[in-house]
Amino acid sequence: MGITKSRREFFGVAAATLASASLLGKRAFGQIAADKPALLGGTPVHTGGWPQWPEWRQAWEPSILNVLRSGRWYRGTGEQVQQFEVAYAKLLGARRCLATASGTTALIVGMHALDVDAGDEVIVSPFTFIASYNAVLINKALPVLADTDPDTLTIDPASIEGRITERTRAIMPVHIYGMPCDMDPVLAVARKRGVAVIEDACQAWLAEYKGRMCGTIGDLGCFSFQNSKHLPSGEGGAITGNSDDLLDRCGSFHDCGRPYGGFKGTRPNFTRGGNFRMQHVQAVMLMQQLDKLVQDTARRRENAERLTASLKEIPGIRTVRLPENSRAVWHLYPFRYDAEKFQGLPRDKFIRAMRAEGIPCSTGYQEQYFDGLLDEAINSRGYKRLFSAQRLKDYRESFQELKGNRLVCETTVAVTQNLLLAAPGEIEHIAAAIRKIQAHGAELARA
Ligand SMILES: Cc1ncc(COP(=O)(O)O)c(C=O)c1O
Image (cartoon, rainbow, N blue to C red; front, side, top):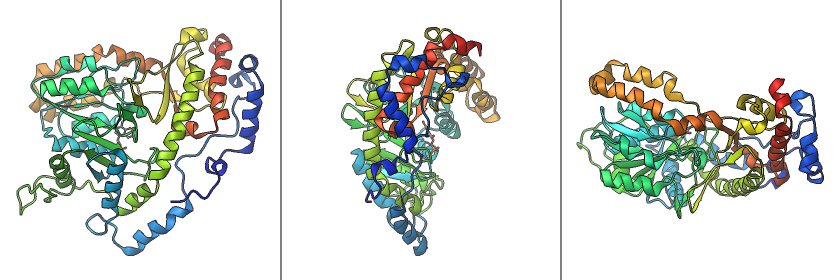
């Protein structure tokens, strides 16, 4: 795929934004901080918008038209899905890859291949998109929530073993926001207790942990290529792994239970399965963006490093700690916010003030285990058949123990990945806006 546009056009940055970036460069942070906050009628720190996401390139169109014109649209004909699987596995250093319809279906298929069955339990990171919980529920298993480490925002490995029961089949660490979980202690407890590890790497394309890519470290790894993701095709997903047997089982289950590779099932008949296949058009979109993913990832990392260096200087802003020898890819860039250091300005108002300064940001995930989804599941006829009343009662009560996760849910603020694709001068605007808001915390709190 050639990059025909200039870098500037590529990131779609308006000239006005550049002007404001250089203005900031000439003014000390202290001066900016003294300016009136935009929420109180002052001038925003950042004007001119941020790089758009996703990005489309005309150069990608001919290969897509070729697929459309061929009429060979589904996986059973044509070869593009398989080509993508080979290319993605190579990029990650995985032995195998199976493309799927979505990240959710990748998790569902992967758990089936790992023999997660009705009435089993799976230990899950609570600070995640709801699909991680739902994929377990669809397999009629119980998503048992481990705690979150407030320093890393990922699963606290020390909270896993005490939650393992005789029904536990798997652990699902989630590399949330593209930040690698500390996998060594997760793998150690999994091996010790004889349970599988399925990595939810749906936000972690090319994230690295101790020289290996996330999604290739546990028994299986699952990815999402939904529209907002760093490698988007509208919908789409993948399972990666190093075991031919597991990947063949995934292949069969994702293709209506047909024999797949070395997995013959109950040949010549179908075994259990569904239709979780990817289409060729999606595969072509993905293949053409692989080089771009590598380039964008490098840029996000450079800008995230700059941002971290600036934010570390601000009292009341706590940047995340990554596991030793690991590299994040920043699907969102999170930090924890301490309202006390902002003269009592509540987090929601801080976010409003940031948005007014031209810095889009939001809270992280909420304590969604109190939102009714899990109650609905455990009060259902099926779950009451599968688990004892005592187990379901203890399970519900265990949500109160997630103190690390509560803190993370209450204090996290995150900016989205597209900001990290902006020019370095614009990245400075994020810290400048925070300093301005901090200097006016009491006024903003009253407003
Ligand atoms: C952490 C996580 N897990 C699972 C999923 C599910 O992926 P999909 O939306 O492709 O089904 C997502 C998607 O947003 C995700 O962020």
